[in-house]
Image (cartoon, one colour):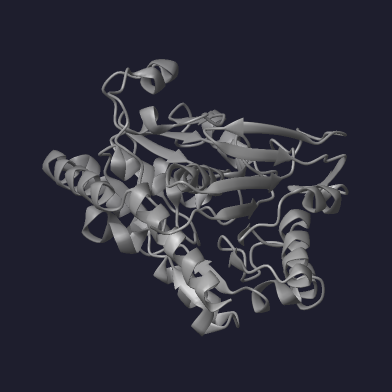
Length: 382
């Protein structure tokens, strides 16, 4: 019988910081799943809840389903990044881990923990969450940061975890050592309970066609392409569920809901603690992103049996394969795919059933077991 491991998991944000998107759900599934397999897991994270809330002068530790979560004192922040000056003290108090999981990039928590690992000769795996390649904003700053402060994060890792083949290709193109990359993937959730009509009731809808987007309202998410599609689909309502990322994207949604060809059919809602029960109320779910290392929300929609439209720039497109309509990052293609699904109930049923089947094959139990094997491989080579 293999011995249990002591695992330290370092992340810039953790549950219930829902505004940080899919990685928070993935971190929760991984850490709690590892405890379920008999391991000891400590999480080091900031106290941030979103880009505006969560600053704290005290470090607090809590336990959730067997995982010890250390919310570090975070007296200041820079946008989404928490400043955690007591991190070295907390690291010194914790028992030495067998292996460390650095879950994120370009933030104080993961950069500091990676440096600690190199200093103490603790093996670590690095999961960049699609951020290794500088993109969207502040590209020059990110390149300077990558070549100075963070230059050893990837180089010092015993393994680099990619959540999809799409991300693996990006990592190689960005200069990550190809021999260190392991594709683990992300899991699909259990099918949600039957819908109670919460979303449609809140929008005052009956049987009108409903298209759903869940995720941060941010640059690079393709929100503007979905807004344009709404103007060309006069019978459909489009609901955006998620936090404002501060890029001005939420303002675009608000303007479209108030005026223009789709006024009255565009709806913006805040983030939902766990939107699984919302997906089944939609006729179509759309992830029109310009780039996602995975795309957890599309996996959640598929598990709910909602037909999915996703761009080929999202890692989740590969495991979904025939269980979704995969399209280019193009407004016309996205609009045509939505229109096709709305017009064909039989196609919606087939794609939805295929999504549920894909979710059954790619459960979190399978993914967590794969992550454990990565740790043991790393330790075997240490």
